[in-house]
Each structure stands twice: as structure tokens, then as C-alpha cells.
Image (cartoon, rainbow, N blue to C red; front, side, top):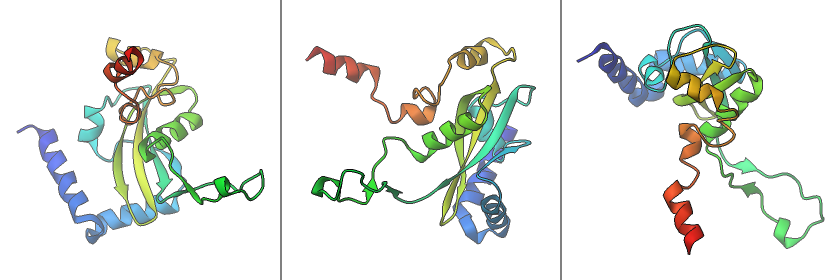
Length: 177
């Protein structure tokens, strides 16, 4: 077995134990008290990050994003108290992970989102780490191709966004009929 397999097993064990693990619990408490979007020196789960395109090189950064859990409350109605406005929560078309990617991209405008992964959650928040690449840097061919796609997080070109949009085959099928 390679080293990353052992690292992955260690993280899986830590996640399974959850808040019963005192080290994991302390991490979550410190993350919750900190800012909602914070740049981290190195990924928390290195095996997951490497699998999604992270490399420890200049121009690639990792950002941890905190997203509040729970239902999304809708805004107050503007057009009067009509029955069609009488609901409290809305279902967004985006997952929490896709929202985290977009928030990270809004804060780091000179970077492009490569991918993201889940790192933890407590009763109030879910935490994701987003891998970003600086647009002005030169990378190898595959990374450069992704960096050249502007607005990947907003157009559903990351793994979080791809899960919420229909497949190309299905779209063609709908148009044909």
C-alpha cells in the first residue's frame, strides 16, 4: 500500500469517530470561531486534495469555507401577503459544496476553482476546503486547461456543480422529443 492509502484510512477513522474524537472536536471549535473563509497553509486531508488536483507548488492555494447548515430561509415578500408568498424556506438548486466554491471564488477573484472536498461538520456548520489556482501563473497542460476556463464554479464545471446539472446525453434527449 502507498502512503496516501494509509493517510486516507486515518482520516476515514477520524471522520467516523466524529466529535467523540477530542482532536477533531477541537479543530471544529477553532474553525467555527474563526472567519468563514480562511486560507490554509496546507490541506487538512492531503490524500483527498491530491486526488482532486492539489499540488504543493506556487500559484495553487487552499481555502477553508464555512457554510451554515439547515434550511435556507427566504426573504420577506415585497408584493403583499398573498398565498403564493406564504412559505418560509426555499430549496436552492445548489449544494452546500457548490455554494462554498462560489464564495471562495468571489473572495479570491484572481484565482480559478479547481475542485473542493468536505473536511468536517458540527451541529451548526459544514466545512469545505476549496483548491484554487492563480490565473496569472503557468501550469502543466491539464491544470492550465482548467485555469483557462473562466468562472468554473459558477457554470457547474467543478465536481460539486456537475452533480446538480443534467448530463449532456439527457439534455440532447429532451431537445429531440
